[in-house]
Amino acid sequence: MFESLSDKLGGVFNKLTSSGKLSEKDIDAALREVRLALLEADVDFKVARSFVKSVKERADGEKVFASLTPGQSVIRIVREELAEILGGEAVELARAERPPSVIMLVGLQGAGKTTLAAKLALSLRKDKHPVMLAACDLQRPAAVDQLKQLGKQLNIEVYSEEPSESTPVQVAKAAVEQAADAGTHYLILDTAGRLAIDDDLMSNSKRFETLRHRWKPFSYSTP
Image 1 (cartoon, rainbow, N blue to C red):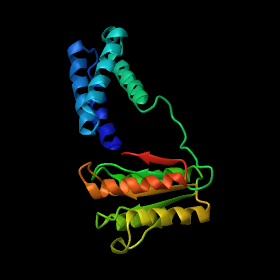
Image 2 (image 1 turned 45 degrees about the vertical axis):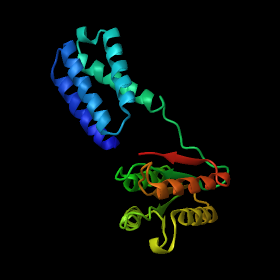
Image 3 (image 1 turned 180 degrees about the vertical axis):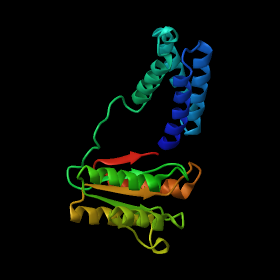
């Protein structure tokens, strides 16, 4: 999602910086493209509308239309507002009192959780944190194999079980035990994509919640 959003915003920014002097009409057109990019990235329409409104108000207040570099000024405001939406400042992932710290990736079907799980694991390893992946998506036939292949490419351990003989919660529990025995700092659970109307997947989410009572913090991330 972030890669797609970054590409689309990059296109908007290139137009802004190549236009020289900008009119209010130019800014409005650019912000419409920003709003569309946010909506296409599954950002809530109320959040996208509020975001664009904040950027426009700041642009008016800072009189960017009269500045020598209006495009750069708008880009700065957009970046600052995006950073504010994402929390305002970077913070480290929370660590459990005893390993592992469990991170469960949840989100819509096709949102790219499996690839994100591998990228997150690689990032943590680069920061010198022992990390392990767990293939808890037993709904999509190729999901387990995909995660195992990514783990092999990155030399990161992946815990998995035969989908037809296990359940996502069983995989998660076994992975937590194995990570704990190995002293692994972070365990990333790759789960199946879900919709609110999917009773089985939503039920699995509730069962995952029971792991929190023993392993804290138990972090949730939605791509």
